[in-house]
Length: 427
Ligand SMILES: *[C@@H]1O[C@H](CO)[C@@H](O)[C@H](O)[C@H]1NC(C)=O
Ligand SMILES: *[C@@H]1O[C@H](CO)[C@@H](O)[C@H](O)[C@H]1NC(C)=O
Ligand SMILES: *[C@@H]1O[C@H](CO)[C@@H](O)[C@H](O)[C@H]1NC(C)=O
Ligand SMILES: *[C@@H]1O[C@H](CO)[C@@H](O)[C@H](O)[C@H]1NC(C)=O
Ligand SMILES: *[C@@H]1O[C@H](CO)[C@@H](O)[C@H](O)[C@H]1NC(C)=O
Picture 1 (cartoon, protein in one colour):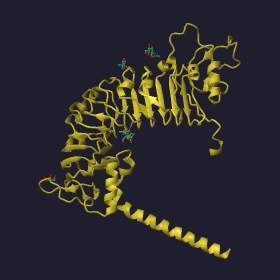
Picture 2 (cartoon, rainbow, N blue to C red; picture 1 turned 90 degrees about the horizontal axis):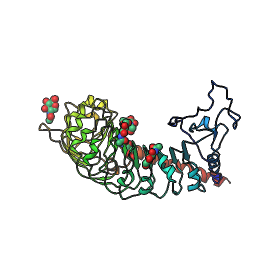
Picture 3 (cartoon, helix red, strand yellow; picture 1 turned 90 degrees about the vertical axis):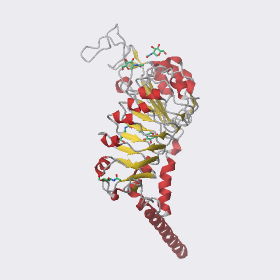
Picture 4 (cartoon, rainbow, N blue to C red; picture 1 turned 60 degrees about the vertical axis):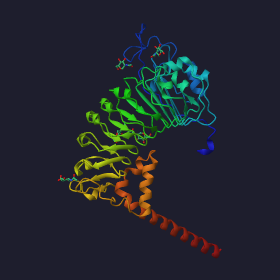
């Protein structure tokens, strides 16, 4: 496979989207009910793709089979149909785009690049304004905020793993009046969070950037927002008091920032919260009891903060969750008459005054391998989810198993060496 890298391989997937046609004065092409009396150009009933677009696809080495549009997404124009959706994946290194080529594809409303490491080129205005969905994952190089801002009509913008040169997110989004979901993850973005948001936004993911400043209060007006992800940035300040205004919120992560202050009480009015990740910040205060009344909650991560007081949860609440993490909060403790010590939460038990009995068991005076593991899980932040997920359950076993693995590898290496030497001698 590696040897044939010179050949260009693409995967073309055309999503079946019906093009929202305006009132068409002429009747549509022959349906299955009527006899195709007047279809002079094509021999089959399936319409033909625009010849210019056909050439563009051939230039891109995308196989253009007969009856293309019956398999993939095109509009219903006559006599020639036009492409609506194009997905370029795993491009070879000698592939390149040109503005002329893109001009002939300007009917596209959805364009996706996946693992296509190519420098970005100028997009013709017709294509820029037609696009409703634009995706670049580990693909376009030298993206800029100004380039992206020309896509006025986007409802979905998804960039991941491709650095974007822009002085702030507002440069990109301020003209996008129909934006519905925006993912700009791991894109080296700097600057502050925008203050103006489209009220129809349902999905915001700005994770793994270098965004600074506080979470603007204006964000909490987004009544349709379902997913909010600001994890792994440099955000400071408090969680806005009006955070509970995000009444549609299901999944939220503010993890791995420097956010301080308490969990705002208004959060209790978010009815459908499923996933709450506030880990690795400087949050303080008591953990509010209302969290235990969140019926939909499945994931709760509050580890590595400065919460204090008695943990307001019992065993049945914790067992109901898929993920529960609370370690790394030194002033927090649990009541051993409501939570069994076997849960191994990584915090101390409380004395009768509700203060932690120091030092917390298994966390403050363990062997070095365990404390390394705990520290590793805490500082890392980035995508540490998988790593830290089972930490509380399995951390005691990991150290010894690693040692065992090392011994096993060492032993087998020695056996191999021995066999090798014996063979050498026999020869
Ligand atoms: C796209 O946006 C322009 C303004 O930037 C507008 O005139 C045009 O009607 C929009 N087109 C679509 C298909 O939404
Ligand atoms: C939000 O969505 C509604 C209905 O989907 C639409 O009527 C309205 O124009 C949208 N608002 C904005 C600012 O895009
Ligand atoms: C937030 O983004 C990070 C990194 O991209 C990801 O690991 C995490 O699952 C996301 N969390 C939510 C709630 O979407
Ligand atoms: C929301 O969180 C739940 C629980 O962690 C997860 O199963 C689900 O995939 C998440 N949904 C989105 C859109 O991130
Ligand atoms: C622990 O729980 C028991 C039983 O609910 C209660 O009587 C006691 O006051 C609690 N202790 C603390 C420190 O909260």
